[in-house]
Every structure is written in structure tokens, then in C-alpha cells.
Image (cartoon, rainbow, N blue to C red):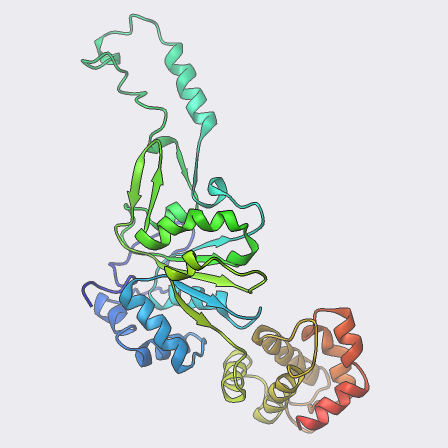
Length: 345
């Protein structure tokens, strides 16, 4: 690797998203966390994020090749969470841009502070003509006012913050749900994703001193243009297998006993084979597992004990944690829920 991983810079305080570690790791420790796909997977797992071999390899290569990472998959499979956990692994700032219809450069990259520019111009115009030699330089220009389009009047939005040359270390830039933005917005990203720079007509080209770790996510509500995908390493995150999802629930809801944990995960896995408007994601599995643990506590029985086992009535009462559409809940509730529960026993 020609230069250190993006997260391995000297620790620095960053407003809006400081490193979470109270005792920052050394450069060698940060480099070791991305020394191999296995080391990276272990670092992620330590922070509660379980990856398979394919995803570990893709993330590892994105770091080594210093390329953006493009993640697609159904909602709730952990695409957004991966960016957050990477920021924890490398003890750096997470900069998040949540996309939406109508998003443009003013909200995503930069805009000029027009009120400040106007105040500066008015203050300049109110000065007496004979302000003295200190007010002008040899060319007759006002050195204090200078150009109205300069860095002092620039308002930096997430994309420009991510390549801020004054930063001491590279952040993680999350461009979340790019498929929700207009297609025209994708063209704004091509320069950033390809060259890690942004050209501002009034200022010139601003380049990153430390290339950020860039993660783009998409729920595939529409196709993203090939020109954007070509600049990224692509990975599809699918629903996890039984063993992986069981391990996720074990880490997230440790209070749930193993027997009941297995039944919860098995039920969700079976439920995903039904024709539903929206299948439950891993986030819903974790929420439901936590809810079942509370139900067991309410009944005065240990979670997973004789009184804490899943039953059709409990499933019917808690379906809203798994399914987010009324039609789906009505379809599953009752006979189908009991049938699925019996199959997953």
C-alpha cells in the first residue's frame, strides 16, 4: 500500500463528529485494523457489525485502492450502519449527506454567504474616501475587503467538508440513499468520486489532502447511472443467513436466551420467504428480539425460559415491529403467523 489507510492519521478533534474512543489508537494500531480482510472483519465485529467474507474483501479493497464504496440492498440490511462503524474503527469523523428529491449543490457541497457578502460590501462603501494609505494597497485595492468570492464567505456543506484540506485526518463520507436524489445530482458527484476534488468557479479547484472513505448507499428505488458506479467498488448486501443473523442478535440483545433467540431469527428468516410489500430487515429483527425480551420480563419469566417462549398471541401482538405495512400485518396475523411459527420451531 503506497500510503496509510484513510483512517490512520494522527488523532485530531473534529467538530460535529469527534472520534468516539477516549484513548486514541496509535497509527500502527489503526493500520493493523485494515491490514487484511480478516483483520478488518474482526475490527468491525468488535463493534457489533458482522460481515461475510465477500463484504470484508470489498471494504478492504476500497480502503487499499482508495476508491468509493457503493452499497445496494434492501432497507434495513446494514448499509448505512457500515459507514458509521467504519468511522468508529478508524476513530475519525463521520460526515453524512442524506439524499432527497431536489437536493442540489447548495445543500450538498457549498454556497456563498450572501448576507455576509452584502454586509462587507456595505461596510466598504461607507468608508470615507480619504481613509488613508492603510486602507489600500499599492494597486489601489482594499486588502481587508479583497474579493467577495473568497474562502471567508464560503459555507461548506458535507461534500466540501469531506475534502477539507485543513483537516488533519480523513473522515468517512456517507452519501446515504443516493437513489432518492434526482438523476441530475449524480453528475455533481462525478468529479468528487473520481478525483476527490470539487471545482468552484469563483475559487478554483479544491482538492482533498487526505482522501475520505466514501460510502454510497442505495435501496434501488431507481437505477443509478453507470458513470457513477464506474467510479466505485460495488457490493450488494443481501439479507444475512441464519448463523450470521443469529450472531447479530446475540451481540445486540444479549439478554435474550439462546433458545428463544434461535426461534426469533428462524421466524424472521421464514417470514422473508412470504410475498410481502416490505420484508423485515436486520434492524427489524433486532427490534423484535428486544421486544420479545421485554415481553418475557413482563411475564416474570426469564427470556427464553418456560414462560418466555414464543406463542401465536405474542407474535400477533408484536408484528408491528417486523412489518411496516398494514396489509402485510393483516395478511400474516392469525393463521399464517401460527403456521410460520410452527415451521420455525
